[in-house]
Amino acid sequence: MKSWLKKQKTANIFYYLSFFLVLMPPFAVPFVSSSHYLGITVIFFLFLYMLFKIFVKKEKINVSKTLIALFLLYIASQSLSIITAIDLKAYLTTYEKILVTGTLFILSLYFIRGEKEIKILAIILFIVTALSLIIEAIIFLYPSAVLSTGKYLLNSTYEQLVALNINRGRVYTGGYDEVLIPLALYYLMLGKNKRIMGLFAVVIPVFSFISNFRTRIIMTVFAYLSFLFIFINRIKKYWFILVAIPVVFYFLYTILYFQTGYTVIDRLLLSRSIDYSTITSRIKNWGYSFDMGISSPLFGVGLGNYYDYLPPQEQKIFTYSSQQQSEYSLAAPYPHDIFFNTFAETGTVGLLALIFLLIYFLKKDLQIIKTKENGLSKAYVISFWTLFIYGTVNPTDQLAYQTLFWVLRVMIERGY
Image (cartoon, rainbow, N blue to C red):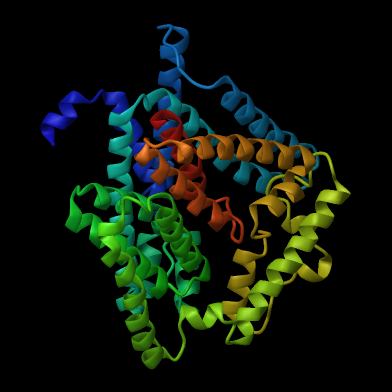
């Protein structure tokens, strides 16, 4: 460890630290709202360092001009939505995350120069995912202890989300473990750290199942099937992993069903009325989002202002139970879809900027997939689109989501 640190520039170490801090759950830290703000502070000073290096020391960043132009267009589209925002605080809260992760994107283009930096970031991803899985295990095994101690250890909003999901029989950490499945499978295929990679390849789907989140199961299936489709000729000798997953799922389903009478499979099959209601609620919210985009077609209603433009009957607080009230207050501000949310809050300009970016990403990713080499880049491509699937049915304003979104793209860009 000491020899590795000696080889790294101080600025690079702080870059890796910032990446780690913003991906981890927001723990309570004295004098600041959460550990995320420590990461944000590091990002701010790193940005000043980068500006000094570029404008004073005349260093250059090798990057696609098209990518930078599309990125700046996207940031501009988010910025201009302030014109129609009526809740300035909500706008600034959302805009802060966009600026922070956008800055991290630029920093990543500066600090990630090639394979060495990509490898270190991959190690950080594995560490963060391992810690996430440990936290999920604690929540699953000791939910009462988490409920009683969470308010002392976690950021208040994050603690509410964890507690709310425990009360609904779900395990929530705010992580995106499934993104790591393609990387684990790729390194397993190469024979590198086979035991550790095999463990990740099996344990992540297990916790996706235990979490009781339908989206996580869909992400897991997408990650596995995509990897199988792209690497079919190279993965044959590891067929036992592909067979093991359904077998493990079957035993998990049997055990959990007899213990609780309800599993994520039942949620996918819409076995209870609440399973229908979450879907119908999303569809209704997408309708509201579309109406908002139509009513303010150019710049939308403003970042973070979706809730303020909801019909009066939807801007309500339930009185039936504190849990229902908490659930509504945490879920109501989001349309739960990246396209509808973008159209509602940033209008046609924001939606087109997002679509142009995705077209650029998709074109590059198809080029990577078609090549015979670049196996690691192909794994990162699957990871990125596994993450993107989450955003099609969930909020995307989380710091960790946006960080992964941008940093994965730089890792693909630099690795190809």
